[in-house]
Amino acid sequence: MALLRPRTKTRVKQAETTPKRAPFTEAVWRTVRSIPRGEVRTYSQVALYAGRPGAARGVGREMAMLPTGKEVPWWRVTRAGGVLAPMVAQEQAKRLRAEGVVVEQRGQTFRVKRDDDATPKARR
Image (tube, rainbow, N blue to C red; front, side, top):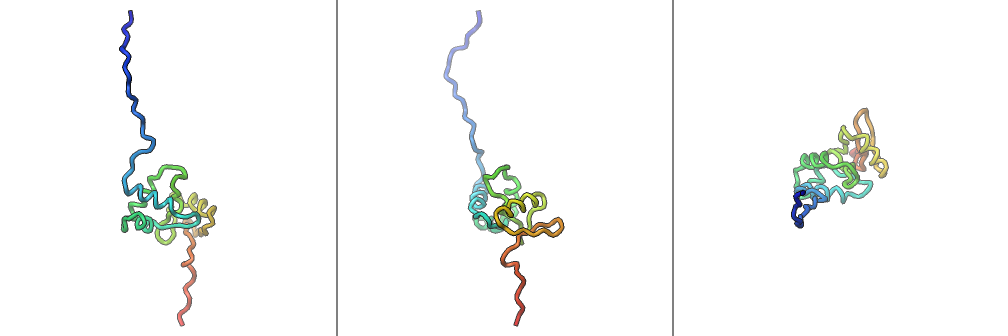
């Protein structure tokens, strides 16, 4: 005769649908999500808006660790001066151009053209 286990109600732990993230990570993601389509921000600007001025390198780290997908528009964040990160520059340039942002390419370097990049006016 086979031994039968007594019937008991078992609790099944539900896996969290979203992993818990650090407050800084949440602030960076929230800030990047708020960048309007067709506009870009630098890592230092994102750090400032996220409440951690001077944490531009931390923002860069967070951007590098983003999961794939379109949840957070990572392509709207650039290095200082509008320079795109070398590892993803072509994909980032493609996405920015699709949003109407002017991106220049000089050799292997991609750079966002900004309004303040105009030639300086001559002094009188």
